[in-house]
Image (tube, rainbow, N blue to C red):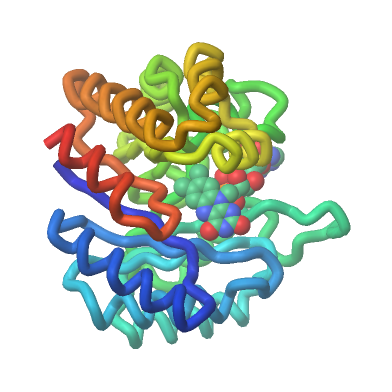
Length: 273
Ligand SMILES: Cc1cc2nc3c(=O)[nH]c(=O)nc-3n(C[C@H](O)[C@H](O)[C@H](O)COP(=O)(O)OP(=O)(O)OC[C@H]3O[C@@H](n4cnc5c(N)ncnc54)[C@H](O)[C@@H]3O)c2cc1C
């Protein structure tokens, strides 16, 4: 089984210390890589670099910074990739980023595919490139069919692997993989797994990224909203079961959204190996 973990950048001394501890614990599972998110418009750009730097000196696994079209231009991406290469980075997660409402033109790169193509043209095979995939459809896409075509285009211009938005309905994932394969996509499409540990937080995220929480799960999370231990136990059970079912159906790679905590992802990994 191949595992990867996603972090957000640590911005305070306390955050860096906590992330160091999380990393030490997760290193025991021998992950393929760790990735670090990138904030739109400068909010966490330096912090992403600093966190990548912190991780690369504390793990033998690959570390992969996220890069976004939003807030980037050719010159800045070129400089950043050179700096990352000097740190030994050989993998990047390439995204468009979420467009802040006040922004009309996001700059030189409008879609992740354009940034993927730029990196491929500039650097050849120097970087492994991951892109995002949306089994339930990207919220701004008019139809599933056009969204999958746009996804296939990212692969055509050079993506090596994809990580999905999180989901709690595995049929959506397998249907997406089938439909992408019908368009000639033959790269790994790795399910992004979001542990369930906090009802309010999950509801907030899911609203932002339009991820569906099935009502049978939602009803139980509401029921346990004042009982965090029961909620965590239920969340662990549901997400572990989902991963186990995917494993039985041939999925061998899992990417965990960790929220910089080791325990929720580790418990799931422990249940599926
Ligand atoms: C694994 C993962 C990691 C993420 N990490 C970050 C992060 O670090 N920082 C961050 O800000 N956000 C992150 N996001 C969120 C992501 O940036 C948003 O979901 C964003 O809205 C879309 O990014 P994308 O790379 O999928 O965009 P794209 O692939 O560019 O697609 C965006 C939309 O445009 C459409 N589209 C694509 N190409 C075309 C075209 N040629 N013509 C017309 N329409 C087109 C697509 O169908 C889709 O609706 C992440 C998401 C995932 C799943």
